[in-house]
Length: 250
Picture 1 (cartoon, helix red, strand yellow):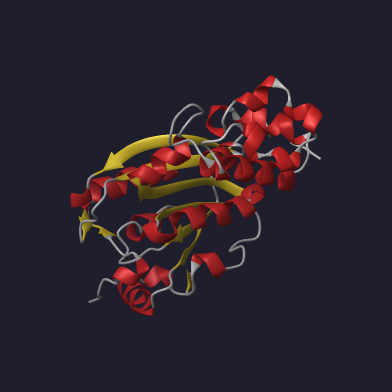
Picture 2: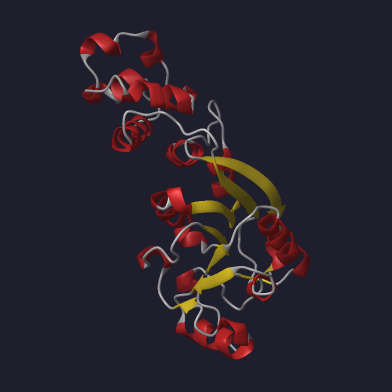
């Protein structure tokens, strides 16, 4: 049938109850086009292609899995993009949703690529290593709150939906997993510009143990750096704090 490739981070979901819960999380939101990332052996795909009235595509790097999917699910003819998700162009004209049991070795890269398409994203439902899912959903003051928390929550509402046992996969990974959903914010964050916002957040967390004053001193005038907010560390700032500070950067 097919083999599992550790080099591609392949752990195939085989628990049908979890598959249906993920598809339910997709079906709860309106969309017309859907991209599945890393369909593998089709555990989710068989349910997704049965959804009515949608345009469906899947992106899969592994030729062996592409061949298996095309042989097993005839509706997939012409709907599989045989590339790495990280290398594809935007897969649809117009808005679309993203779903996947994401390869854990590139899951954060998948999200940063999705950020590039945020104006066209209806939502993202994804399976992640539990630790990564917790980081994405973390709030300020939490030790797991970091760059990915701020940058994603700046543009998306994050829902931590449910956790998944390692026994739901073949082969079982050495970590627990969790499913989250990202939905674009109804009210957009006001920043000077996205480049400044991304630079500030990444610089602040690059030296997260230092006060903000020491971590980002190259981005602000000395007079501004004397203000009390710069006594805090990056993990203590809200997303709104970061956004407001962009207007005061050099």
